[in-house]
Length: 210
Ligand SMILES: Cc1cc2nc3c(=O)[nH]c(=O)nc-3n(C[C@H](O)[C@H](O)[C@H](O)COP(=O)(O)O)c2cc1C
Image (tube, rainbow, N blue to C red; front, side):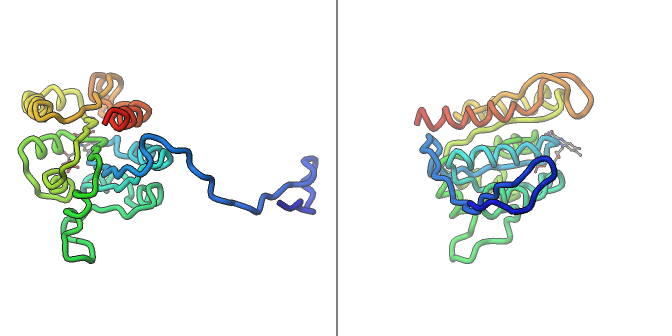
């Protein structure tokens, strides 16, 4: 620590801390857990930045996987910096090794969390379709799946979406229910992504109980 000789008006002398040592993180239920964070094309995709940051601070190894549509809402670079891990979004840009990157990642995961999860994502997961990286990882991973849906209230209420939710619930997937409130589309109703605090707490509860 040094004292700067530069006087700052009435504030006086400035203390500059020159030792920025990494602070040892306290152990949490998330320490060392590998979480694939799927991010899909919802207006709520920007909240994935906060989710990534919070889970990483709690000691989880977060690997963001974004759909092409999610990349229209938020830059992969944001999640890359916050997670300190590469962000994957392209099924055809695989890793260096012999094994396709998405299989390797799928094998390592302790949890596949998708937040926000679009109606389209729920449909792909329910039907077992795999046209992109996230849906391919979904089929390839043995990890439990936790979904935080976010969408317009009418999309959520639609019989097709409800049937997909029922299929996924019957399969044992974990859900973080959407909130009611003012939606980005201008309507009031259910479909708002659950609060980041709720999502982080759900992940903590999940690992505390496994
Ligand atoms: C401005 C805007 C906001 C959107 N928000 C949502 C949303 O919150 N939830 C949803 O299910 N779809 C939403 N959509 C539609 C999805 O982006 C679209 O269905 C897309 O194909 C989803 O792709 P993905 O699931 O592969 O990310 C939105 C579209 C636009 C243009």
